[in-house]
Length: 68
Image (cartoon, rainbow, N blue to C red; front, top):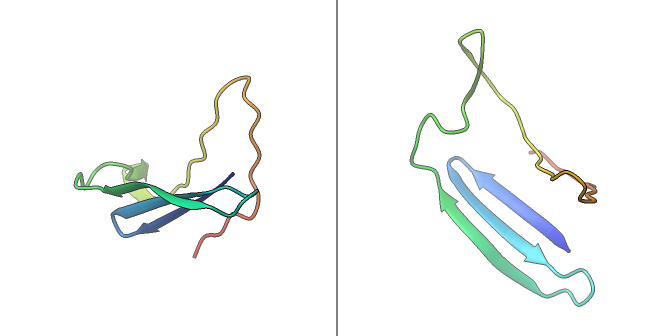
């Protein structure tokens, strides 16, 4: 499986692709309306971050991560 996550401003879309048969499905569309959600700060100043989530005892691998 392959996830494509596209974030444009506060609009997020996630598409799942079955790498065996090429079938794709738009799984999530989200518009963040909370201006403080996801805004990190360091010493009171805004700071950017990217978080990648995994769960204990669950295999996970990442490859081909792009940030434009």
